[in-house]
Length: 485
Image (cartoon, rainbow, N blue to C red; front, top):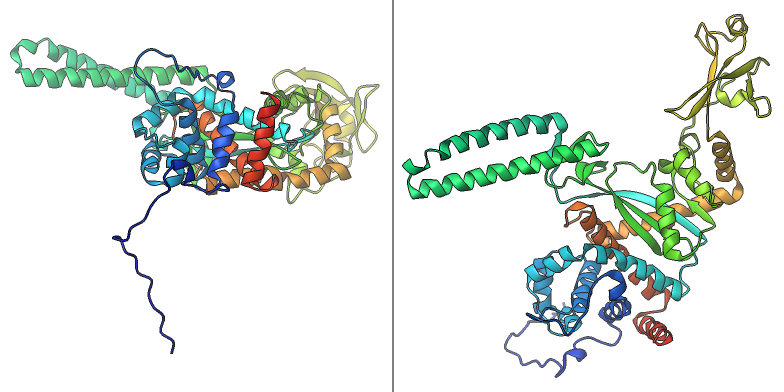
């Protein structure tokens, strides 16, 4: 047998780091890409002031702090304490920060105080992709995914529960105030304790009052006391408190154009707004917008149809894995005469317009002669009503038929087939590779800021690959900077 020697480390062996920090990382180290990317950002445009002539205590360079966050998030390091540690122990972070070592409080405050600015980072990331001809903006894909918030589901309350809790706290405050009247008889230590208890109770009361106000303003049935902008979300891991993250991806290279985080547990009503937001980033209208059946809301889709954008969104029947078999009694077998505004049943009888239901935005049609239904051989199967068969037609029925044809077309099927590989892949990367399955910041602005950074990190990784590596990426960035210098 051949014996193999062991490799044993030696902590007393001399080792020399390069004499300058710039040599700590190689020319093709990915950290150089993140440095170059942040240098291209227009900080004035995103709302961060860089002024070297400020009066007062010196502060850390906003660009360096941005680099720290973007690079940290790209490797799943998001905690302010872990980022602080990385600036002291990780050579690539030391190089990136130029040996600056902000403490965790400074890092946390920078992230907290620049939420809206961080949201704009993705916009400039997408515009950089456009400058590099990596996004063309012709076909856009939209999808949503539930992401946990920084709040416990156990802190979710209904309006009734909050009102009951408020009543209990008001009684506690009243008791504490009565007790404070006897304050002169108490010892000093007890006085301090009573004051602190009263302050804490009044703080809880204020928090609950704000939650009750918020629940009245929104359509939500319940609210989370810790983060009152989060909602109950259901996913494969169970029910949690969190947000619905929306993402729009370009078809050409699967790069993210825009993202948004909404306080809603489903995707209905999000389609037109998210595509319009993406079009604003692109500076033009896309030709085609595609999403799954979760976005099939005719009123919302109509908003985008007005702009003459082709929409590929299947209805629930088209998306069903096991579609229900159509029988002779189904609405699909009733012919609509647009000129006369009537429906004709399979037996040739007319259903005339009766009324418009404002709430459901539907026209209602009823059999002209109810005796036609009552004496029909299909009575009992087609309808059991004594008034005869009725049919409802959405005010957006023409749009529904048009969308159905577009989805069923060969081109429609081809585009829809691309959806999964384009828009679901970034969510997988963010949740698994970037450790982005939950948000650290509370509130919608905080969640939006983190989502923007995660999406920008995804775009950067894709750009490195598409442009042929780190060095080529930096070369292309320099060309753009010279172009606008």
